[in-house]
Amino acid sequence: MKKNLIIFCLYIFTSSAHAEIYKWVDDQGRTHYGDKPTETSKEIEVNTQKKDLINTGESREERRQKLLDSFDEDRARKNEEKEKQKQAKEKHLRQCAFAKDRLRRYERAGYLYNLDEDGSRVIISKEERKKTIDGLRDNIKKYCK
Image (cartoon, rainbow, N blue to C red; front, side, top):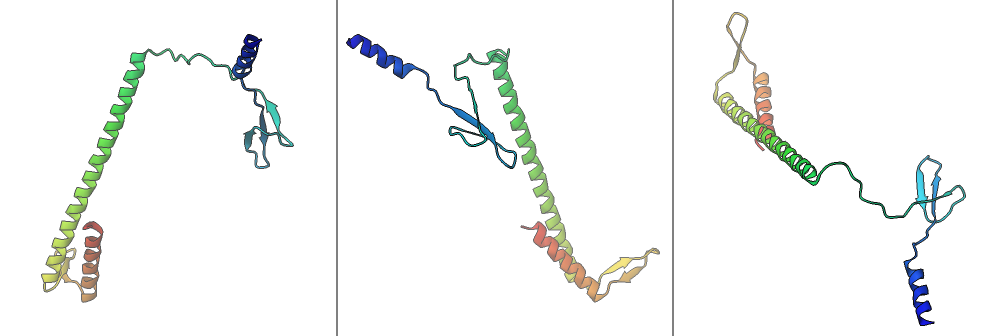
């Protein structure tokens, strides 16, 4: 009798779990799944039997090489991004130094001028000079962070 009881208990505990799964679509057209039925849901059957691993046809060595290649590509991409950031930073530093030097010269100069078509000097007005100096100060704020 004990033997039959043990076998019966083992059978109950080892039997596969049975759960019902329902599928429905809401008013917005989104699909939902759940374990409780709704008015518009339909019961679907899901195969829970364990299957063998998916065979992709690639050997372990091929998968390993693919992974290593992926790591190499990521590393190269990151190095490229670092190089671009470094170049951008160097460009900002050059623009900062240029703006500071130009501002220093403009503030020391007695007057500023542009050359016309003939090569003659055309002196810049005080308003234009102030506007140019303010633009250089803005460039310094922008590039000298």
